[in-house]
Amino acid sequence: MTNLGDLVVRKSYGGDVTFRVERIEREQAIIKGTEFRLLADAPLSDLVKVSQNDPGEKTQRVRIKATESLQKLQKDRLELTERNQSALGRDWYPNGEPSFFEVPGKVLHLDGDERYLQKSLSLYEKLRVPAHGYFVSESAMAGALYRLLPSIQPDVVVLTGHDGVLKNRPTSDLYNLSSYKNSKHFIEAIQTARQYERNFDALTIVAGACQSHFEALLQAGANFASSPARVLIHALDPVYIAAKASLTPIRETINITEVLKSTISGTQGVGGIETRGSYRIGLPKLMDLSALKVVPSM
Image (cartoon, rainbow, N blue to C red; front, side, top):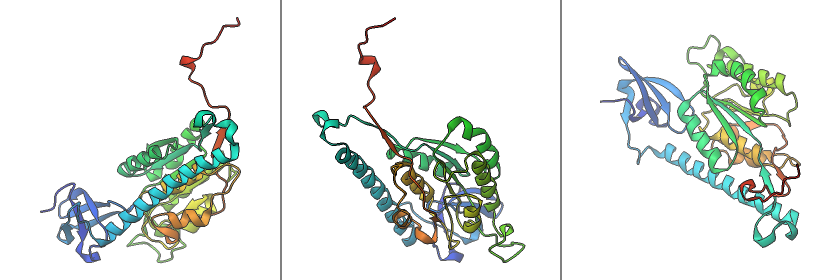
């Protein structure tokens, strides 16, 4: 018997993707991908329970790739610090401690899935990327951005959640927005962000989810988007790109070939345009004011 919270696969799809049961309505279950940004429904008779420790070959491969991508980000983070040390020279490293401070680009992340949002915020924290995250339905993202952008003033905006090519779509034309569940909402949000900041290097926009209308998202003003081949994307792919934008120095462009190949979904899942980074360093190192002894001058 299938219960809420169970991990399952679909027999009709050959057990290719692992899901968690979110809701049961009569003989139908609403299921959500554990690794992919996929929300679907399925007959209970089509579901087979799987173990957390044995989720299936495809899910295991994706988890390995996700671990490799995270390790690559952490390695790049360490190398960035080492590059700063080399560029500044010995004078700014008394006693082996850096005398500069870092200012990574600030991220505003809107997510139509609360569980994926929490995973994303956890990854930003690991990478020491300043991020503000909000659980917002895709249809409400444009309005949320209109309110949030002036107060948060981010360098990077992430707009993600759930999307997909509709089964019973009114047209089989993949160029038509009506063939997609939420691409039109992502486009409205991108347009709102571009009304706030037109410069593609002053505000980097990462947008889309599984099977999103890649071309339309770029045309609306996104720097990076999903999904060129209309494939499922990994839950953390938008986070990976946003982190690279945040941690690439302002004087450099993001290495687009490297960042796309290093995502879990690869170039079939995400694509984009050449974009400048938003990471800066400052001098000298910020002091601990509670320990600073100052003689008042007034």
